[in-house]
Structures are given as C-alpha cells and as structure tokens.
Image (spheres, rainbow, N blue to C red):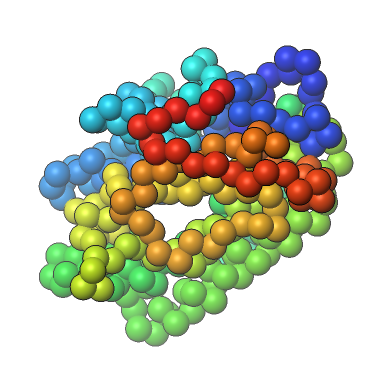
Length: 303
C-alpha cells in the first residue's frame, strides 16, 4: 500500500499519481514479504526475517552499489528519499524496525478476507493507492528439490505441495485466488473516490524459477530451506512489481520465467509518467501515450 502527499492535487485517478509524491509504503501480513532466509548462508539462518531486503517492503542500504538492495521502497526512494514505512534489518512483526510490515486456504474465504480488509481501508484511509499482488504457483517448488533435506523442509513448510494426493489441487486453487481477486478489484467497488483506489497485479500468476542453458533450475533462487525465496528472487520480484505498476491495467505482462540477469528498471512513460489505476488506464490507453523506457539498474531514471 502506498500513501502519497497532496502537494497540489489529491486525486489518484483524475489527476494521476506521479512517483515522487509517494510518502509512505506498507505491506500486509504474508510470509514472502517477511524475508525468511533472504541472505541465509546456512539452514539455521533461514529462520531470520530479513525484512530490510524484502522485495515489496524492505529499505536496507540503497538501490546502487556492490551491496545494493533492490526493493520496491528503494526504487521509490529515487523519486522521494523521504518515503516512510519500509522495514529495515531483521526481526519479527513486533520489532520497531519492521516498520509497517505486518503479514482458510479456500479461495472464497481468501477473497472474503481480502475484501474485508480492503473495505476497511476504503472506508477509513484517504490518499492511498493499494497494490494487491496475486499469488504465484508453488507447485514448481518440488522441481527445485535436491532430495534429502530439501524434501524434508518442503514437506514441513507445505506438505500440500509435496503430498501427491493434494498437489494436483494447488494450481487450480492458486488460479482461483487470482481470478476471484481480479473480479473483486476490477468490479469498480474501490474506484468510487478520487483519493483512494485498489489495483490488482496478476503478473506473477505463471512465473517459474529461472533455468540455465542446460534447462536446470538455478539453485540460488531459493534459500537454504528450498522453500523461501532467496535474495535474487526478492530482487526480481521487486523489479517485476515496479514494472507492473507502470503498466496500464489490461496490458499487464504475465512473466513465465524469472530472469536471474534482470538488471533493468522500467522508467515511467514519457507521455504519462504515472502509476496506473483502473480508471486512469482507460484514459491513457485511449490517448496512445509513449511506451515505457528502460534503463540499466546502475543508471537513474529522470525524476
């Protein structure tokens, strides 16, 4: 979720939300943004919550340099260095450095829970743009297992994936999560105010871990527990989410294979340097604005 300052105009639809007015960022409860095992060098370190390097909420170090940390907040800080709410360092949800990062498997129950949370935000939170990111397919995890300890850890974390009786249900369930949330957010229910909206980002629906030239999965995509995303995965997730935010609704890219060499950050379109919402996407597509530009991560977009 992102809060933006009302410098001259308050609307997130009609007057369009630029990148630089974003003043606060927040993440709801989930394991992936907690950063389990992001920088783990051994199995015991997997239990450490590296929230500062989490792709959607982390704010450790900076976007540039040899020890750069590629996260959504660090990207946004290129436009507004004073953005607040990101997590730093390690720790649980009760730690002060976790910032605003606080995280029934049935699809309808999942949708209802998200809807209840969005209804509460819609009723009480002004000047906010909420990004809801769809769940990726977890069934591919078993293909990254090297056996032995990997099998044991994956079974412990999510035996619904490793169990041959329940595994076939996982992909249809994940797609139901995606479809139900898309229907909810595309319904216009949260597009009734100029200073609040919700955007659904489905770009991770079909994504699978990257492979090398021999068709083998990169082992460093996952942490030592063979389950949680490692640092390269968090960096890719951050860049893919940023790209999705700068893509009009209806033109979203469904990434099929993560790219371990992805070092490109998308810059806003020259004719429309905005974060897209359901409503302004329709207008900007009709106006046939310039396509997005891309720069290497070591370069800086024009602000």
